[in-house]
Structures are given as C-alpha cells and as structure tokens.
Image (cartoon, rainbow over all chains, first blue to last red; front, side):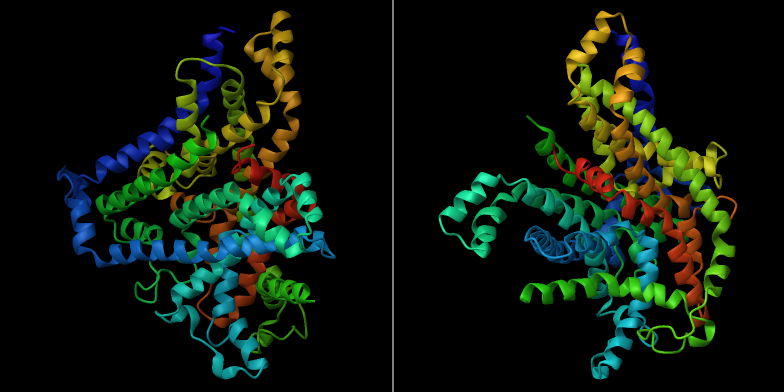
Length: 287
Length: 265
C-alpha cells in the first residue's frame, strides 16, 4: 500500500488549488484587515484591530448589515424548516400526482438567484407588479403594499423570496429522511392503532433530527453568503433597510474602494462561516 | 380535502412567480402597462428575440466556462476523493477535512485577494480566469462527493489489481474511473448547475460582454423603464433553460447530488 510519490501526485492539484484559493486568500484578507488603507497609496501600516473596532462601534451600516443577516437567517430558516417538512410529508402521504408536486416543490432550486431576483422584483413592483395586480383583480385593492420599495417591508420581501428559493432543498432532505424511516417501525405503530396523523407526529417527525440539523446548517451557510438575491432586488435598500453583510462587503469594497474595510468584513464572514461549518463537519464526518 | 387545498396554496406560491415570468416575457411592449396578472392576449416572441440577441454571446461564454470548470473540478476532485477514500497516510484525515471545509467558506472572505490574483495572472476579464476560479472553488465539494462515491467500492477490487502489479494511476484509470462513472454524472450535474447559476465571481472578475457569463448579462438587462421588463424576463427565461432541462430530465441525479453533498451516507 506504500506508494507515497504517486499518492502525492494525485493530491497535488487539489491541495494546491485549495491552499491558494481558499487558505492563502483568507489569510490575506485577515492580514489586510489589520492594515490601514491609504486610498490610491494602497495598504499603509499595521493598525491591529482598529478596522474591526471602527466597524463594530462607529459604522452603523455594518451593524445594520450584521443584524439584518441574523434576522434574515432566523426568519427565513424558521419558516423554511416547517414548510419543507410539510411538503415532504405531503409527498409521503401518497397524494395523487406525487411526481408532479415533487417537481413543483423542487423547481425553484433550479432557478439561478439572478433569475429569481428578476422574477421577484417584478412580482413585488408596487404599481406594475404581479402581487398587487392580483390583489386588485380580487377586489382587495386596499391590501396592496409597497413591498420592496418600503424600508419597513423590504426585509419581509426578502424573507418571502428566500423561502421560495430554498424550501425545495428542505423538502428534499426531509423527504429522504422520511423515506429512510424503517418500515417495521411504521407497521408496528399501525398495529398499535396509530392514525395517519399520529404516525407522523409521534414516530416520523421525532426521527428527523439529522435532516433538521443538516438543513439548518446549510441554510445558515447560504444566508451568510448569498449576495445576488438581495443585490438584484432591494440592493440593500431603501436606505440601508435591507443591507446584509454580503452586500455591504461588496459595496464598501468595489463601490467605495475601501479595501481594508472590505477585507475586514470579509474576514468577519470567514470567522462566521468557520464557526458554523467546523462543528457541523466534525459532527457529520466524525467517528 | 384539506390536503388538496393545501397543495393548491403551495402550488400557487411556487408557480405564481414562474407564471408571471413567462407571461410577461411573451408580452408585446403595448401590453406591458396592462395588469400583469392577466394572461397575455397577443403573445409574441419579440422580447425573446431582443433578449437573445443581447445575451447570446454570454450564453456561449457560460457554456465554455461551465463545461470546462465542471470537467476540470470533477477530474481533480475524483483524483483526490479516490486517494482519501482508499489510502491512509499521515495527516490524511486532517488534510481531507481542511479541503472539504472550504466548500462552506463564504466567498466574500476571499473576494479581494481573488480579484488581485486573477488580475496579476493577466486573467481579469477572461473566460479562463473564471474557469480557473470555478475549478478551484469546486474542489472541496467534488472531492467530498467522489469520496462518498468511491468509499463503498470494495477494497478487494483494488487489492486484486495491486497483486497484478497495477500502480495507483492504473488502478485509478482501470478500476476507479469505470466504477465511478455514475458518480461523474452526479458530480457533473451538481457542478454544472452551480457554476452556470453563479453570479458573484462573474460580476467581480469581468467587465464587458467578451467574457461575462449569462447571469451577469441577464442582470444587466434590467432597465429603468417598464418597457424593458418583457425583455428582462425573456432573457431570464432563456438563461435558465439548460439547468431547467437537467432538472426535468435528470431529477434523480440532481437529487442524489444534493443529498450526497449534505447528508452523511
């Protein structure tokens, strides 16, 4: 089994690419976040944690972005998990047209965030949008909303878009989890006289801890990194009402050319990703 | 009955935006001011024609970028996944862990050095720069997927090949690759859909039609006037056709990839 040279040759491409593109780059962001930024002069001198202290204490948009990122995660994941579970149970119940509904539940997953953003921007448009148009046709005109153009509703709009985009993923994982429950357990419950409703509530749902954990983790990861769904719908606005870390990082780096601050936000996001990912991967792969 | 009412509500939620997209994309300019919920009365493909003319070069860029990066990242991931699944050596599980954790790192944390690096290589605004980038960031997940795929291949097959004097390379080409062909289908589809749909790298590493992927071109179709909405929607619809076809014809492989990438087997 000892073929060290051949093994090394097989691993070199993967290790080299990951080392350069992920670890050295993340390290660079960490380094840049401790430097001063001199505009056209590039990076200046070492400033320690000054950039971070300024972000957390003086930059209200950064704090808003952090808060919105957390709010968006909690709200959209809080809806997506039960919705995905309901969808998966519906598919498991032997409904007519199961294959068609499976496709309907999963189809948003295939949409790129760019296309979803275009579509939902049109859905939510206040005067010309589909939702308000539907309300008017149903004689519910008094219920029309400004949606994404209002700073009090922009986050709500994003939550709806995220639920639409990601609930197919939760459905998929739960459906696999439900299908994996052993038939004997279900048969035993039926013999004991459990109704369909009890079967799901008492037997199947309590066995979905790993799927739930998986969905929670992956959606957390997405809510941290996704940029396009927000950038191309609300653009973080109106004002900064729906700014998230991903959009603020882009804005401050490529619109304002503040590279040290951009690197600092990027590095904060690196730490957050690692804090989410390391325990998950250890738990899922460990043993 | 309650169940079918629920299914109806869910169907409306999932399909109304898609209806809205298609309906708007089929409208002539003259109908854009009418209530968007009402079906188009004189459907036309003129918005599709306009959109296609504006994004066809970008579609080609995306095809080249996606196919190349999918193939490269699958190959490199298969090589690494095979070694981690079948050989133990010092630090092997830690190196494996460090590679696959890369999948979960938010791209914003590497974005600035990435732009500088691609620029320093002279690859800014080139398709090759995007291929390199997507290949590199594909490696964690392709390695993980192939690891999951190759792990169950019986060690005895490899041992027999070894007794016959096969090297690591020969075992790879004669045993592992033929047995993991279904794995290549799953990983290939996973990577194709991800890379085709990607926007942030495309936006950051290009400026102009010569190398922009279709996602960036579609985002740029968004006009400031109402008149552009049908073209924007038509462009959006055109841009997702390849991925949509994959979902419709290979749904089982898509599902397999998504599950293998997230749930422990």
